[in-house]
Length: 70
Image 1: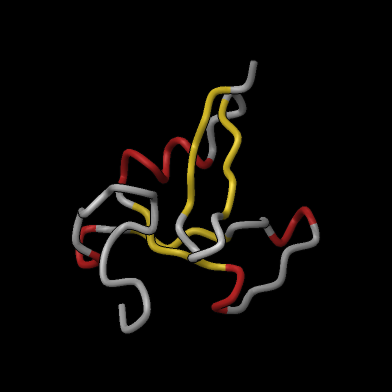
Image 2: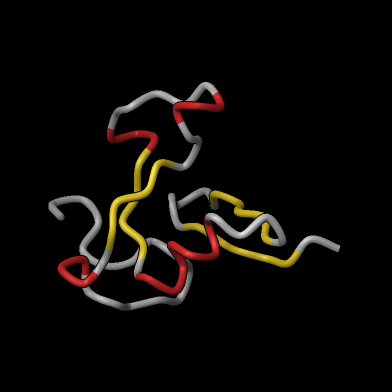
């Protein structure tokens, strides 16, 4: 909450208090369990993070962008 005041998805302003923690790279895929590998996501974007039909890109400012795989 100190770093991520709201959902970290580009253009989303859902408050962090309504968001869920998400690892950017799951530990089962070699991700580490630290804050650099985590972000707050609202429910909608948290579901997209787990959707096999979506890709997630981290932008230079740390925000995330979701797009459909094509």
